[in-house]
Amino acid sequence: MPIYSYSRINTYDNCPMQYRFKYIDRIKPPAELKTIEAFMGNCIHRVLKEFYQQLIFQRIPSLEELLEMYQEEWKKNWTDDIVIMKMPLEPGHYRQTGEKALKSYYERYQPFSGSQTLSLEKALTFPVGPYSFKGYIDRLSIEEDNVYVIHDYKTSGSMPTFPEVEKDLQLAMYQISIHRHFPDASKVRSVWHYMLFNQAWSVELEESQLQNIENMIIQKVYTLESDTLFEPQPSALCHWCSYEGICPAKTHAIALEEEELPEEEQGFRLVNAYGKLCADYKKARGLLEGIKLEKEALEKQVIEYAKAHQYKVVQGKNAALHLADKISYKFPDSKDPARPFLEKLLEEQNLWKEASILHSARLNKMVKDPQLDLAIRQELMSYTSMDVKTSFKWIKNALNSEDTEEDESDSEATDS
Image (cartoon, rainbow, N blue to C red):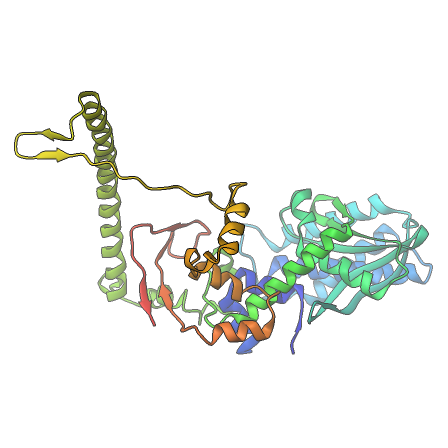
């Protein structure tokens, strides 16, 4: 059984195809993309590790020493294949940004006496339901009254809101791991340090929140392990993916770059033709919707006219309208307070079997529920056959944008 991690789950959430390449097929990336953002973040992490390592042995490096460590890390590890995605920024911009972040952090937390550091880059393995997880904590410290504090250093160029941090899966997983490993902890708190903004979010999740997140993690792993398709999920993150050159979501666009006349390539022409047809369909559907509204308005007027004159047939030039009333009964739906009483009556009179129907969507949801007993799931699955449907979705800017628009006009092609 594999050992999972936040990174592994997050990879699947971002793109199931990337997950398959990395963790199932174990394909070595054709080209490992080294971004300057990652390089700067690694330098900051290594410097803070060295800094707190010295603090453990009762030595507090000066600010000048801290910045000197950073400069040495930068020079020692810099290579010419590091990529800068955000032009026209230069390496110096990133080096200075990291330096400023460390300076602000030092000035904010000196004299560094608020807590005792217990470990640095601590690796912890812990269970979540039937699954095993591993996590790495940048720094773990302890305060008075056995309050354990998880510190994580973020070097992202964007800062989330507090509600977003509260829902952060990584943060919750780390708190779960500390509760598992340190039962003496009276409280467990996480502090997410956003280095580039000199800000920090401090979160202490309640037991009920942690339990909900555990259930969500179990659901995610079950979904992941049940996946047999691993569909790619094109987004702006494709630019940073090391598998871009072999991913079926990108290979056609890459192949077009090699074409002398890409506009004559078959796939290119098919998509353009399909796009025009979808635009025509959308326009026609708009006209049809307008006609439908006019039709419904006229039907209402005819009914009112016929009732006012007690007519059952209203005559026109070439045809007549025959109006006939039919009685149907509306029973309480699932949200109606009377629904339980109706169901009880049907059960008592042995009519439930005749009134109920099997609902395919509900059965699909049931067999995907990780809480369902495995033996029952396997028995239910023995009655199934796989139905694979191919849907179409427009992706703007040739797969280079996160903005996607569902093509509402197309029908789905089915492969059984």
